[in-house]
Image (tube, rainbow, N blue to C red):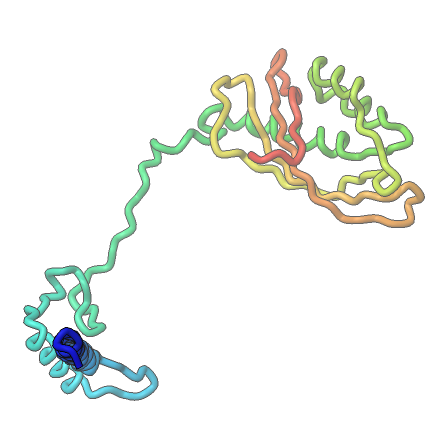
Length: 238
């Protein structure tokens, strides 16, 4: 064997030996870290909520963990958190009253009781007539409710009446609830009412019917001292 070959073998053996030493050191450090983590995991508290717990042992274990991890005891009262589930010494939070001036005025304070009642009455009377629909005579409901509408609104519905379909040819009013919306128009000669209407629709032959609910948003205007329906939104968000 030549001296050159011997030199290569020696260096190779040395390299393998160094690699093995480095690997063993790395494995040793890894095992030490795992052992340290396991030790910390062993210190965690596992509470079985389905069985009674010895309060003294529980608190002693917590203190032991704090000391091992160099943690200072926490004064729960100062931190605003209850200690070990105890809520002693904590005051109930008193509900705060909302400043009523932040809310918009209600209808009665803005319009007066008489106008509120009169406009509400007119709105309800209008939907009881306007809601009923006969697809065979599509202008019938428009003409019958003409006395409640402004001239502009009447002209609009006369030119654009509702049309019936085979499945919804007739509509009948059953009952309704009226609501004051949140907020009021700036103009005291205008008022808005929200009306939820329960009705029934029938097919062309009146053999099948279905109960339905619609929401009408009505804008009323005071014209010559009388509240008239000036605009209608049907099933629109409000």
